[in-house]
Length: 341
Image 1 (cartoon, rainbow, N blue to C red):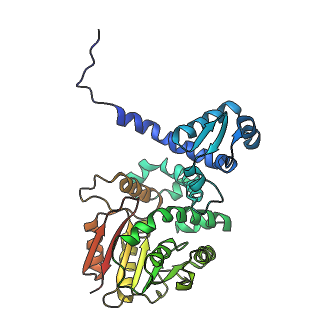
Image 2 (image 1 turned 30 degrees about the vertical axis):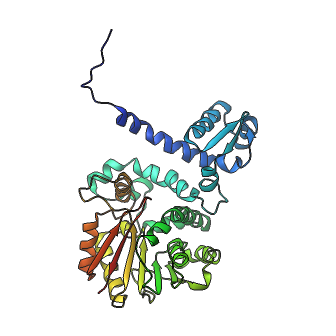
């Protein structure tokens, strides 16, 4: 009888990581193929195969994998979406994340293949992967549809995180919040829904405003919201006593961020605030995992990175802010509030 060697480490973490990218790609492929859009009602395998024009055996394996993930259920040989897939993975859901999934599949998947070079050189992989330079965000908006789908993907993400960000601190002292780079306005919408005294502004590049106007109109607080066009690096900032930067700071180089924080500080009245939504690294930089993976993603895809709370405090202090608080949430975005005193 062979006795196992208890001194050999458990390989579970290595085995899990070997398979992890396969799970992601399975979901990406199912979204790309239109699986979840077709399975809003139960369908037999023959119907799915004919509609999606896929190989029967390969498609069966893909569908059964989605069942194992909890994205589909199979009942009486029919497949149908679970509530989570219906909410986040269908093209007509207001909470859909399909735009961000398509971006992850078509753009980030390819760029992450060059992670080694990103780490060696400390720079993004746009040129290496797609043979073009920045500014990177212009490439998200090559068509109106691509722009809308990417922004709706971020909107779905924001619907998960924004309520936690605006609940992290007492914002009742503020009267007017300007969400800089606000995209669909999910952050300032959540703030106005939480605080009845608050009015808000969505401030973003002009070509991103039509979708913002649509989402604001559906928000239930549109009478307290305004949508304005501009570039927060160059144009005058709208007047406000609270500015917000949701998933903005981690995109840009430190010189650009320092410039933006200084512009915000100068525009604020005494007692005004800056609310930042980013995932905060632990001080020893060993976690949380979401923040570390996002930081690597920023290195691969942007000019920026994620930071610890002390690093944010240092940046904000250098810009003039004298009070900085951090709050960790249960979702993939934390909150920082800085006050001009």
